[in-house]
Length: 363
Image 1 (cartoon, rainbow, N blue to C red):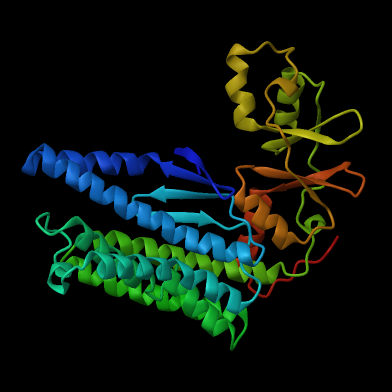
Image 2 (spheres, rainbow, N blue to C red; image 1 turned 45 degrees about the vertical axis):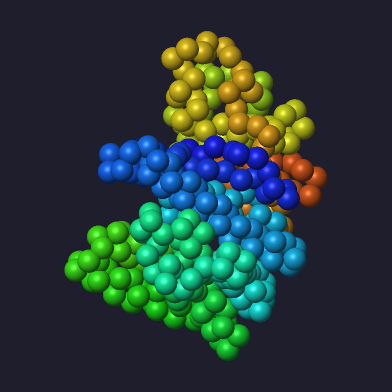
């Protein structure tokens, strides 16, 4: 994810913090400083930092459970709205999805239980999470209970939406389960938005986020169902012209003007992809780079490739989870065969949106 800073790696997963989270921390600190001075500001910053440590542990509940089922998680990003763990693929079975989804809230329940049991917290302290006079441990325990309950709301992208989807998928098709879970989430979003009009305005923003995410989940599920059984060769742009790594910027500009392509595979002398040249990279390099410079100097490498025979849904996951704008499709010898781009897939999604029963045939 762009605009994020890598803090390190834990058990093979990169832990990143988004710059907006740092801005959020600074805003919390400055607001508290104006209201109550340095000590109150420090307490608030420490409290928020501890909450997000709990959020990180929550995400690792998902990560470690997913890893149990052979699903890797390249990174996890901390945002002001919580954490986002990027699974390389979705669990194959509803029971696995249920286990992965419920693992996060269970971590928060365990944290809250430990704080309450071992710190001897009176139940009366748990009701005022916003009161700085209440002990830090009591506020942290209450925050973890809130995180667990909030995440179990039956709405995407919350864990409760995944739980509902998994339970429904045990009784019906995955597409139908997603449709029902998405509509449930959107209905809940409308209720939250309505409540926000008479209370906390933050609920309105949360409602908008939930509504849009739930709709996106339903659309993505329908698209994946439509491409089930298809291979990369069915969606790739086989007419996408590659560039030789010895080609100059002048030649790249000529090709850019002569074709509708926005991305170009860069190949070596054996027609094997070695990089990717994007239109924006080419335009950015033109003002200060000689026309005779080789495209190899500005291409993006290493290249991400997929086999023509690879299932399209796997390639879609690979494209979505990477920063690559396009994937180079190759044959079983590793020779360039075409490009799979976000534009290709976007066009397929638009076709399905206007003609849901359209079937893509191999060519």
